[in-house]
Length: 387
Image 1: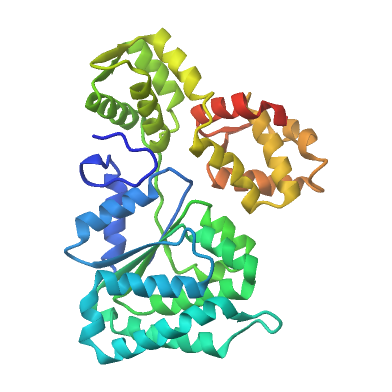
Image 2: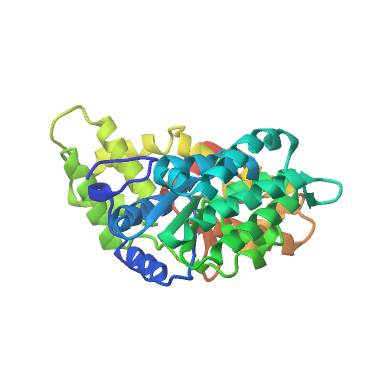
């Protein structure tokens, strides 16, 4: 099993998730069902989807589409149609209606990407954009008898970018997807790193996705964490003493695959070559270097908060996380550090819920704490000054 940090994995490099794969297959067997996969970054959503596609490609036609980087519905339309034509070129030549609609849409989209989809003063869809969408629905109508599943990844990020242009465009996009889901053989799998439920609630459009079936991805259990870590290390000929493995398990107890991969990769990076066995002292020394390093993924978790929170929420979140990185704390102990940024305690409750939804922190019986001990250690080393 290869160490893979960042990209999604499938096949021999995919680990576990039998329950989630089974649940996803059960939902997809219902011809009228579409799926929502909410969850934090690096929990393994994209890998789960790619492995499901690999296992089920003989049963369904899949279009996997990453929404990251797309800025508008028109850009999505253009890229999506290109992907359909590239993956299934036979459809463009088989149906004259499809081909005619394709030519019309391909010609109109470049201009609409510049002029826009929404008339901002009225909140109405432009006539030209409406024609494009109508033509696209003709194209999708030719696909519904082919058991198509469209996968939209990084969904909530895309919604926030649309919101920056117009809330009307968000509503239009979600309404359009709802119309597509009414086709019994055309289904959607929607996933996103920023908690989708919190996003659509904040945008006041939750009613437009409430027909999607939720699929929860669970953290790996203790036995799975150990099996996964040892499999990754075996591939690069690294072994751990019993007490070194026990220490690793305390720092990886959250069961998030990304941190297990990052830990294994760091051990591989620090070895001098050949078969290597680490004892507890050596593991602790390497771990200190791991959590002091300015790794891109760590920095992204810190910087991306600014993109999805108001200025005051962002400052309050940074202060709260700086304190929680050192020790678990309850709400009342945290409040004095953030009250200069937030007017009401209710606002802070909502912010903490958002941080919990996005898997930075978890609420116990009395206190909040970081979900990942490894992330908490890095956050403390890097951002303690934000207290």
